[in-house]
Length: 612
Image (cartoon, rainbow, N blue to C red):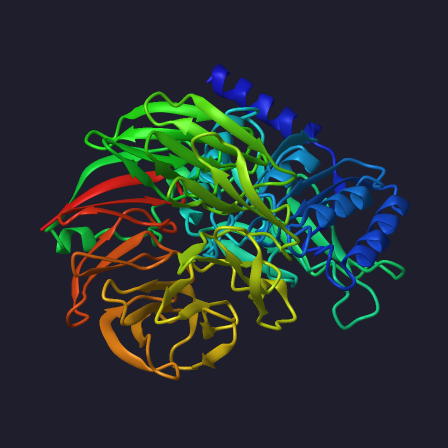
């Protein structure tokens, strides 16, 4: 009894010692948009005039496009705040980042934060999606970091921050929720929705804050949050005007989730029980995200991760053979020529690595991140970077054969080699054709979009019949004359909403396309219009993954943004089998032979599958 009384008194003292305080919740500043910088300057000035505020939380979408100049400008503005501020990236900072998310970490110091204040602890994580369009995803390395910091100050209640709402708009929402529920989480803060909104995430009280942008009004706005021992009060504040009346009061309390028996929805893997003809030979789980595909050489699989490692796995066992450390996140799928791995990193370097032991043979330093994947032809690697330069590199020596400068926007996909030309798109709404031997520009084409986000840059272009086929987020499929870049046809179909995922059939008669509505179609490579001549019975849910479609051994391989791999029969479009690897985006696929395929997912899982 005496021990119980003492414990009660200790807890009572801890909570009564906590003082009331105010902080600012700013979100979705979108520096780089029309009024983003000016709206943020007004908010910073307003915050500095309020001497009652103790700190500022900025919950993502700091910039419009994740560009280096936007990040530097946002940092410059935020640094003029007179009190501490804590910042995390959102989808606009991560998905279209010319640095592969590296610059955010370099400029702001981290993509996560943790601190304590007056009896509360605050933890914030990145939300993704990182460099590939999909639902959001908290990076695996952030989740492992969260595990480590949640062990700290465990007696204090937790306020958790992420840019996204903690629901299925994040592929791995449940991984964060299951963690924070074990640590007396009392409040969750987010942005993303550009409105003030009270939320409930599996019993956790949540608050979505309005965007700092003015939109159609004369001024933007943010929220002032008043924390006391038993509640959080939200008030919208518009610079140069009065603080509005409280719009929300949230009770702060220990919800004792460990005692509750509520059952919440989680991703289902029952499809793996349905299709037993496919089995995982082995599984490898990385400690970080994987945003690159796989390359194969002899008995090894090669890939890279967002901790900056290039590494090899034994093809038969899945055990790591060697690892090479770079200084940036890796999103480029490596390639192999003879005994050399060609890989690129967001640390601005292109590497030649010995396939046998993982030792560096050569390194080329560029001016910015290299996110585009290399393609190889006769001992030459062709690769584009974020510095506006496309390079041809002699793989044996690591010497540059030629460079083409002046690209508009950065490159993040894999180029196509077709009839002595190299074709690729950039995040500047441009599509280029270069002479493979000299690097001279033959033609370039623009889709004329007003937004860079509609660029034909994420799809892997395909070529046949003197035509180059591309798709883009503007939902157009375009057929260009491979010789001169003239449009043969360009079409947008409401019943087939293509986006970024296409592939070429092995007989070169079809361009496969995955639609946003989860359909798989085949478009004629010879028709003078977008003529759909092949349909699959496959029906996926809403789909965003830009990963290319592959065909091998009369099987069409269809990736998804939710970890589901589908095998479709080429002859009639019927579904052969499906296998759910994880609940995150499937990276570029690697069919191995008639009975095996290797695949990885964005949350760091690699599998070798065997199928009948």
